[in-house]
Image 1 (cartoon, rainbow, N blue to C red):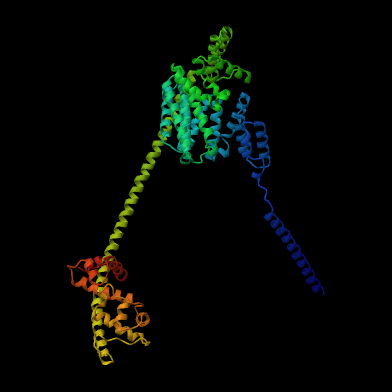
Image 2 (image 1 turned 135 degrees about the vertical axis):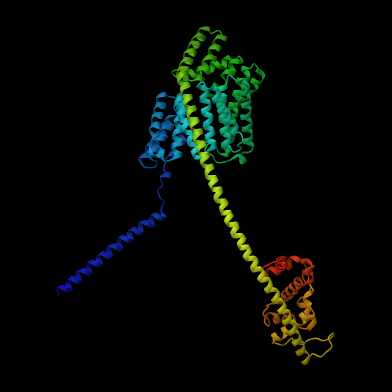
Length: 603
């Protein structure tokens, strides 16, 4: 009784567990079904993403920072990416404290794993650090980060980005007093990039030319004019050949924005030309360039007009200079420590003096002199030369590494060449041994073909004689010219084949290129169905065409054996073929070699 109770209890528990398992399965299945048909929540669907932040960071940095914070909280972006984006947003500010914060954040990312283990992240951080350093007027650190950035570009195999960076380095070296070295780098980058016709290379070339213009703006005016014209020429080419230049690179705009992009760089180039022509005293050309500049959207911005303030001053348009000065004064509380603002102060001082405002002009001259001294003292000459020397040493080390790599590749190439030679030698030995074997095999095959052909001819002659004798003993004693076989109703297709094949062979009908079914119909007075069935059902050949081809090839082999003076073409025509190509193709299909090969091997 106790055993029965235990077993019953065990069965009850088993059933209960089965029911619970089934219930859970149905719930899970139902949930999966609902999820599969409903909209899946994707983090990229939300506003809290890196893309949304970067779309607005240049005109609404506070909102961009909030989006970045939220995106990090919901794990839409990593900590590294969030910090990088924060630094990028802060770097857009003109406030010095913001730039310092951006620099500190970016600097903290240099040694993190995401940068150490990913060249793309390393590129982004180093590029950001170099940009912030340039905005802060810190040429030393800008050169430091650009040097590392150039090495990363080489590691990535990105030649265009490496040349972009080389141009930046060249411009900074000029500012550091190493004009010869810096201009050589700029010229090398420009000439290397000038050969590219795709957008990425063309854009990099234009930026490199702008960098050179910025450092030789007042020292080599003819070069400034030439470079400006080249920029305009490239913009004209890009705008008219967009589809040819299009390459989907990261800086390329959409097709609709191409005119805006081209007009921006054209306007800058006209501004550079206006300054250069004005400073050389060619006011006529300066006026033309300035007129083209003022037609652009760039002329309506403060930064845009800052680039042509020299032209305004040199051409006596002092009201425009002073108006620009007033706008800049209203937009900033303290003097900006850079050469562009210093140039504005100098031109404004000249304009004040020219318009009778001597006192204000003297004040601006004092501000200008103080600012120039501060700009020049940002990096003492000794430090500049020291860092330039260190950069030169790093460049030499990089060259040594490149030479060592080249030697390594050369050694590998030599080893690879030796291995390739040995493999080629082994292959040649194998090839010639196989060729010898094949030659021996072909000789044997040729002899077999010749013997088989002779045997076949003899056999055909005997068969023909026998068939003729049998035919004469049967009811076919009519005259040969008017005789007709009446075998339409026969089903003995083997017999019909023997009669027809004997006639074809004895009369050598196969030597006629036009030989076909109609020939037999006319000769024997039978229907085409009988002719077809005789060869399809009464023989091993399957068709009249196959039989005729066999007869022709047998005849051809005999001619090849017995007539050495006949050419392959003559043998083909003598064997009943229209042309030598058909003959050669059929011969090779049957005997696995061409007629020429057969003749060579046979001799």
